[in-house]
Length: 395
Image (cartoon, rainbow, N blue to C red; front, side):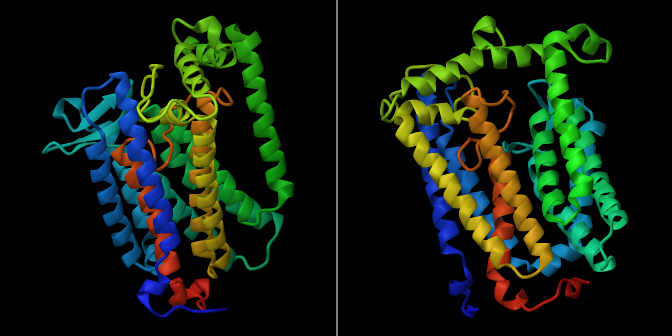
């Protein structure tokens, strides 16, 4: 295999170019989203600032080698859990915790910096911890049996349970689903026998389908179990939004109208006519659809495919298991974000509060994704020095 000795040769210029394209798309989409008059603030300069901060995060993350992340994995994970814990113990009267849409998910930073959502960073911290857990398990149990696979699955679920509880208590269903998607992906590639995971996945699918059917036909029983009426309305408005056009279904209807009105080539930059709430954040895909039509949205989807393909290519080149698991977890995280965000705007999936990676406005989301991509840059940059190392060299 060809090795690269010079720093400029080891830097991933292709990945940097992809991020530059996402930055350009993001700025144009955010600028256009503001033409509907929902906000009087210009979010474009702020997004530029967040991209600059994100570039600094990548540079800082890339400085450290994979071995150092391996050694610090549990400290990083613990730090993230502490941040999630502080959201609940710090009183809102201190003006340190911000609540949005009835979710206690943000820290309010002083000096006009704004708010930050620790769960966005916890996703990457969680991936690092799971990567170390799986790597160490395989090093300790060299002979694979159903018993050792079951033990590994229990460990993974234990590491997931702590942050998931805090996130669901906020509550933040969308972020909780991201954590479960990351976990499912790493369980699959960890080598756990399908004799164990197949029944679990099938059982989960059947349980989800059963709950959906009960929400449609047995609401009274679910209400007795503690479910709330508004949770059913979200399902109803997803399946039949026009029957709930005055409340829960309105957001989905305006989303479909905006994307559909773009037709093949769109209305052009800032040619928006359909008002969609949060069109610069979670529903920014509707802005792209209305401005640039089917062609523009297809190009954005292709850009995400190119990103995932490039990350997958890097993953296949990595030699140590720890880096491979990290890269796979990041791929799962970004893929789920894209699938869920685009899916909810076109009625393929229910609406959840998940931004479109690298395009939606938001400092926490962008910095969290940049932190994850920074790990990819680090593994690629230090690949020359780690490619012949065994995973136990991290000890």
